[in-house]
Image (cartoon, rainbow, N blue to C red; front, side, top):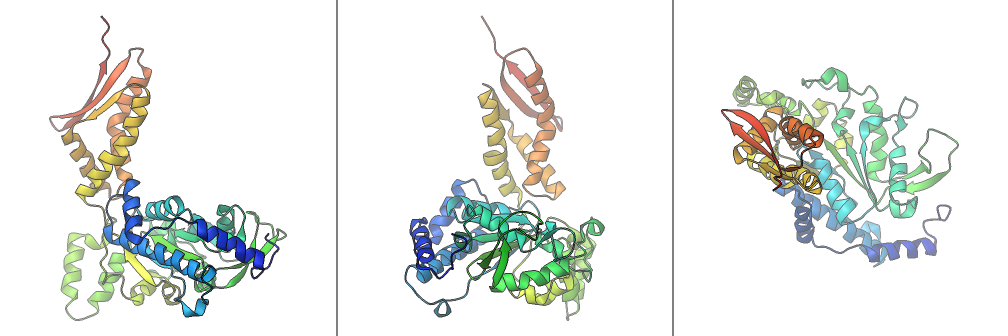
Length: 386
């Protein structure tokens, strides 16, 4: 099928059959379904992504099922998601597009790609990944979603942001990849290799990105400092910047961004992103750092639930006291890595109990974590035989 022309009636029928079978949900229904997967917080982002997903599928159905010309409809949309690590950016993409809508979806680490001719995969190879996600069907793949994670690591050498680890995350070919992405995001006919290899002799197909939605995602560490510096150039902002620097907020990892923070392309240019590339994104969605209540909710309903299920398979009940939960959340907030820090903190206190539970010859029926004099302790309750 890859050798057929996209205008071939058989291909058109193939795409029509695929689109007819796609699940039909309203934006609100998508938001509700996201919640059933245990996704917590980021209400604004969920709303924006659900609407984007609905419009993406609705546009495709109008083109292929109702024969409406592309130029009579708004062009496909690309989104940029910006927010601290562990706040649920890529998890939201996977839940919505891959699991709920079942569109061909790939989430790739953009730092693995480089400009053609450099060490690393050619940026076009991300489209090969998309073809694989569509069971090697390039026509179905051309309706899918590409999520480019770690997008901020493409910032060029002009990035003057100061943040921990800045010297180890710079991608020297980042500006080259930015240039290569320009035509992909806009919409172009591109020769895409059908095999995931570096071989220049692999079979290639002409792949259209006119209907592929690209979603970029990144923590943009140090971006807050860039924004504050740019704002300080205007009247009345110097005092605010000085105050934020005094409080250390401009260099924090777990920072939240406002609509105003992401409104100007010049901020991204100062960070090291090509303004032409930022202009390819029709919507920039700022994610918030997860607060205490959201983290506790995730801890109880996701993180602990997974371990409780593992214990239950062994016939063991897991019980964690309320003040221990609060302590774990406080630890996670200090680590500034969002929901990821919850598992780290929980395991730190659960590790010894687990080791003993799996090592003892006694039959354990319950594992308890509790707090005593500001110290987290554990007990194993064994079965009694009469």
